[in-house]
Length: 333
Image (cartoon, rainbow, N blue to C red; front, side, top):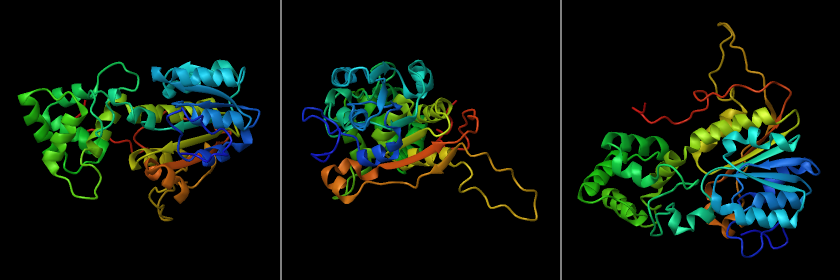
């Protein structure tokens, strides 16, 4: 994936190049000579391209396996690249010691690199432990699959995966685990396929189940919301935030964050007027999606969406969840 002559293209041994790379660099094109936070470093594709375009980069990632890619960039761009271990939800704290920040880029969700590592347990196409932990610590997907009550599991699959057949899947999972714990990716994938079947040409039946479990294990919606507001606190007037998301639930959150009044109820001239929130981001880009050439190179890019905005002088808000359409698992405490 990636054009051979693209500035900042990855070396051939790097396993992942992010989607919408040209478009992200274009959104941050005014930042040459300034410092940018790459809040989801991964294999360093965005960082490399931004460095090649003239920006300095502070990279953040909670996945300990990405350190080798960070060390490579530190050697190639001495004095212009710093790496910090942590979560992008705290990017304002992690980046504050590096001085003024002109931009932030976030690539939300699991990377191709993680999907391709069977031992990480993210993919229903490869045999591996049912894990899915980006930080490689804490509760894993197997814990949820084997310990949640049936209703709680169904509610999770519905809320985080938009899985319409969540109750039947949860029923089959509970029946299977009564025989033996479900501990591998392919075991779970087979249970889901048995529960709801598989039609030729359709997406794999376990797609939404794996998405829901991954989001729950890694607290991805909480990370996203906290990361967006952290960027709002960090960036001063004129700072740029660019966010790439990979499914409709994430994109809805990002869209409402940038423009919380858009899509609200129309105001009647016969009723008291509702006060419009001061704009923290203006202008805000329209949704940008990958073109045909990129989709040919990388079918995994098909659901990706880029949104970006420029920070105004308005003071940062306190984090809010209810206005952003963040999914809630019914019955969760």
